[in-house]
Picture 1: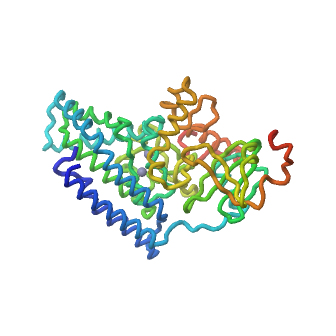
Picture 2: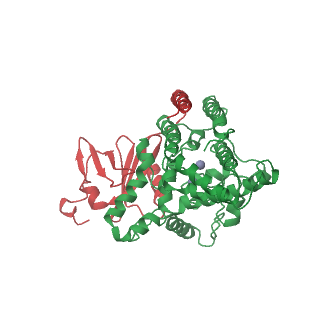
Picture 3: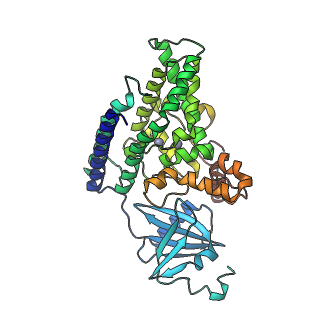
Length: 135
Length: 309
Ligand SMILES: [Zn+2]
Ligand SMILES: [Zn+2]
């Protein structure tokens, strides 16, 4: 690596540190409020236009949500000051592990490998255990 | 290839100062922008890493450019004004097609997606540059300039001017510029549309400096007051790890090829979102779904501002 480039790189590195520090100090991220049903439905309508939503489960901490749409589970998760959304088979969603009040969903996507959503219980009581595989 | 006059190097202090201003003015409530700390760190780290990654392929790019220039068709003088006007227009059109290819074919999208993977649109997003552009080989598109006879230094300067121009348009602080400017140049408003993931805005406004290419080739979409831009990619990232930002689409593409080798060509050179069984969405299918949902809501109305209606 030429010396000039090394100096330039070091200076740029320092500048990055200053800018990141400034961004942290400024506290100008998008304001995040806990999700509620209405907001979840709005976000899901943006993410999955035209898709009918049968039922929504909002995370107890308001930082995510799950919804049933036919044979699919729509997953919404807080990331920074935004959200990511994915859909997975409903059967997979209800078979996902639920431990310590958190359901861990495998999204099978290198861009978003999994999602953790804090729920009171999972799978929903309205899904009888014998239906889990059939859904 | 860095010429004696390198617009990008000269502009770096301006980039830093502009980001500081955008943050501080927002903090003082004079301007409107959003910065999330980890997102900012990822964007700036991508910019820094892009410089280093560029070095890895710089030798090949320089050699190919010099070879093309040695076999040039004409001798174009670097001192002639007409030559600068010509390279400005031709380079900007090459940029348009490079950018369009980078969105419409997955192999090149894999290198470009990182620029779009922030859910933010601020000046730091401009520096969220590719690490894998050299490997993707899109620099080949600029070789005809050298082959035509434009000196390599002139090409490098013009590419630098384009990159520097495109920095300032990554902001929400500037609303609309005067109409004559919006009509001819790429602006914050036009490029906000380019970074938006709303179906109506997907794969529009590929311009570098001049927006005329989008108008000419049918990809122009104005920003509409009734539809605020939602930034990011169709399937956003679930974190801020720069390695994931830089390589996620390459990895996903490799996984698809390994799982479905018979459909490898489609998974590599098809549009992003293409799948052999139609189980995924491309920009085109997303736009069609959105249009269908709009016409279901308003059966008698066309979809305003959608160039394909
Ligand atoms: Zn782009
Ligand atoms: Zn951009």
